[in-house]
Each structure stands twice: as structure tokens, then as C-alpha cells.
Length: 323
Image (cartoon, rainbow, N blue to C red; front, top):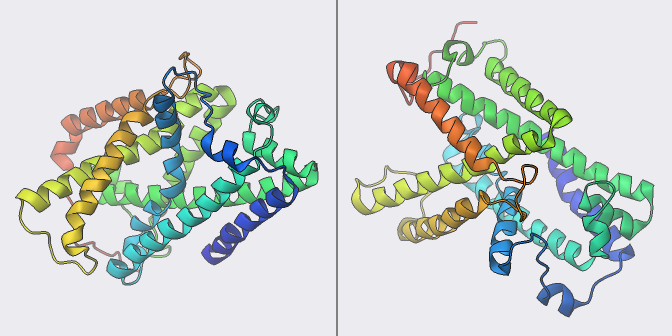
């Protein structure tokens, strides 16, 4: 299944860019590259660009899924770092190609931003092909790839839930930590992750603002966790005991890489919580910081009441139930 999705993912890039290059009107290179449009309403162009570019990091964080599947991966200490490296490199290359294609084939910007579909991407496809069938095929490819990515994200979330449950750090840990021998996967955690994801998706039917508030929590949480982890790793390299032996090591380059990473994630985290548009309303407000604060408060309350008495991790040895 993963191989089929990989082929579709790579082939989908060509399904998108070839029709655009062949049929779409191409913009002037000078205007396309050097002219910038501030559509956010902020008085400062620099601030508007900084706020607008940060959400795009979501296009390159899919590698995070593979890390949480390491316990089910053969030779994980070598395989997972290679997967992360090649996933970022390959997807960054494809993202650059698709990005350049879009900015040159964008066409009429007003029609794209005010698309009756509510999705600028769909309007770009239609402006280029002038065909509902052609647009439908291109959109279908994007949807299939997105759905496949969502499956991977649910699998990742279930493994994170299962891992934390093994440490007795999650409500209902005794139920979530179980791995039935007949399945050999954390089926309880998988089902709960899928149910929660499905229920959160239904919020969009009632309020897009509320749905966006929940949706924004994912990226800001990842950025926050990365920033904390990298900062702790830098402190350990400078002032703590030597890092444990590992098969994948950057050696002396590791510290500079960590510093550069921290210098990137910190401003990204800062600008991600800003509203994209000004003036700010209830509809376009960025609620990610509020959601993160709310989750942190709930987690702290649970820790004080129950977690500090039951948490015992990280678990090193796991008992396997008999068949």
C-alpha cells in the first residue's frame, strides 16, 4: 500500500505541473520573481511575509510520522534517519518544482483569491485547463495523496498515544496500552485516534472557525515540541554528560546544526501564532496559542490529580501476552 501511495505521490507531481506548464498563461519572470503582493492587510510587508510563509512548513513535516513508527521498523537506528533525510530532500525538491510552477502559472490573481470554489488551488487548475474534467482529475490526485497522508498521521498519533499509555501517562492507559496478540498492533489506540479524528472533522460542518482552531493546534504543537527538544539537546551538548552512543551521528557538526535548527524553529513558532489577516476578527483570528495553552492547562491538571502518581516511564521492557 505504501509503495502505491509513493508512486502516486511522485507521479502526482507530474500530473499537476505538466498541464499547468502546457496550458496555463505564464507570467513574466521579472514580475513573478521580484514583485511581492501583501494580501494580509498588515502595514509592514516584512511582517506579512513572515506570517504567511510559516504555515508552509507543514509541507515538509511528514517525515515525523516515520519516527513514531520506529518500534515496528527493522534496523530502526539506521533506517529511520535515512528515511527522514531522503523524505525531506525528495519532498523539498518536488515542493520547489511545484512552487515555481504555481507562481509562474498563477494567472489572474484576483480570480484565484476570490474563487467561487473557496479553494485557490482549484481555481488555478481550472484557469489553466478551462476544463472541469481536467480540473477534477488534478484535484482527485491531490485529494488521494492528502487522504493517504491523513492515514499515516492517524497511525502516528495512535503510536504516540500507545507509547505514552505504556508509561501510564495518559487517561485510560490500561486500556490503550494493550496490544492483542492476534493483531500485534495497538488496536485500541488506533481506533480511539481514528474516532477522535473523525469527530474533530465533523466540527467543520458546524463552524469553520472552530475547526480551524483545532486544526491549528497540530503545527504549533509540533513547533513547540521541536523547540523544547532542540534547546535541551543543545544544553546537553554544552553542559551535560556526553550523548549516548548512536549509529547515526553528525559528530562535531551536530551542535551547529542544532543551533541553526533552534534559530529557525523559534521565530517560526513566534510568527505561527499571529493572525494571517488584519484587521483581526473572530473568523480570521489565529486561535493556535489559545488552543495550546488550553491543552497545556488540562495536561497540568491531569498531572497534578493523577499523572504524577501513575506515570512511570519511559518503558524499556514490554510484556507480551500469550497467544
